[in-house]
Figure 1 (cartoon, protein in one colour):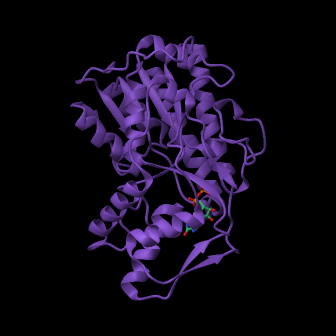
Figure 2 (spheres, helix red, strand yellow; figure 1 turned 60 degrees about the horizontal axis):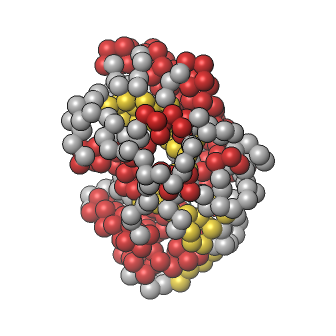
Length: 342
Ligand code: GDP
């Protein structure tokens, strides 16, 4: 990036009728991407549910790309989950993610996809990384053990994008968002992340008149949260960068083709629990179950690389949590685990 202060040309590099494949369109991130693409007037979206095409199946993915010839790919399909799912089902997390991303990235190259955006997570960074975390801290220290299998898979995806860019001249960019939440989140308590878990726990405790709600760990870890609609907006922004800006971003060293997407909205788990409790209107007590892991103590992304390109998040945390709670209540009417993803 020669001059981070210049306002880049960002408007609609992708034509409105471009053939755009949103891999994982039923998940929280993929569905937000579809909403945003529609809102921006993109009309030619390619979608396959996991029942229609198993992205872990090399032949199926090869056939899809050969037949449909997508021009742009948002790779939002992944095996994702919260701290317990990640630490107890590591085999699934590493296998599913490696297979999905290898098949999609490789076939994107084979079929001449113009641009691909690979979505990961800030858990790729070292457990005790300096804060806020810059892109170049990748691979500078040991990973957080509760999600190392997932992180290794995502790091392999970043390396694959970078390697293909270097060897084949592809334009595959990797974006690492922080803790996301929003509509179509996974609210299943055994697999979910903290925010949907808290929404569900406080809601059910209020409904059932339960006196206490259990929060895992000590409550002291700090996390940065971003509404998934902000990530969708950032993803379209990145996919629409001008050729020059895209080239400059892909050429970043020593961490080429990698960009953090954060909101800077950092909060302790205890304070987050207090916020969700107030939004839900629950009046009982919080209990901290310290037999459950805290995970990494702090995970705040340095998003200055993205900010320098001209993008900022829009959705305030409290407003976003209210939106997520409204969605949960609406979806919960008639379902015991709305947004079970993926
Ligand atoms: P992480 O950001 O990868 O650690 O993933 P999570 O979103 O699952 O957890 C974030 C933090 O919230 C950890 O310190 C958890 O121990 C804590 N936490 C508190 N209550 C819950 C809960 O009910 N579910 C989950 N998943 N995490 C919780």
